[in-house]
Length: 276
Image 1 (cartoon, rainbow, N blue to C red):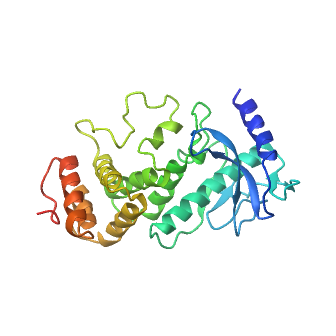
Image 2 (cartoon, rainbow, N blue to C red):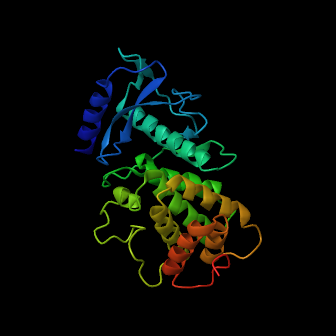
Image 3 (cartoon, rainbow, N blue to C red):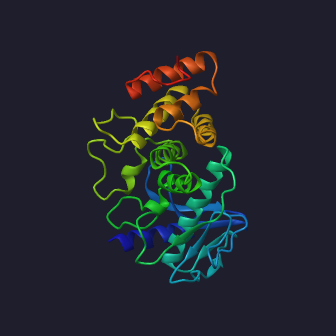
């Protein structure tokens, strides 16, 4: 049944409206409905046949996949096979995440290697039982790229900031649920929900950052502050309180007071140096 849905979506891709020669028809997630759909996007600097470009380098069996393309009547390019339409959708999701992270202040984002074989390790891969494959989930892709960008940080800090950036990139604190086979019926994956006792430090950090970003109404600005805090960590104190202190230290007046109030409430603590 899943294959029939994909085939139908590919036919929808081919029926899309007018587009320029630089546009490519791919599989993607509709921002309003959250469902898979055919879309046309721009992928500058990308070798479509080999799926290589600024966002990533796809590898299948030790080599680049071979994806033939054709031009639609409208002028947009579309892959000739269902699999390649899907893979180009994966690449388009990477490019979108890359653009978001660059806008948020990320630096030196090298192309991400993506293995597309059946023996892939967990990560950006297709999960048949999930509503949205992780590789097409905007938040999940941004999270993975952010984790790669922040790999020099400790697990708690890097994972926490990456988890938060996935939420801001998708404007959805529960973005991970779309790629879980069973969904998230009780909200365990929703950053906006109260955390259970004993939640990992990464979840505590991400939840506090999201609560502040949501309250401020500036998701991109909050993302910039989180990435700036990550760069400033260095060899000093670590942990959620240290990251949140570096975020608060970038703010002044009422903005800092608001952030500090949210951070204290989420951490159930007052030991945030920038929030006396």
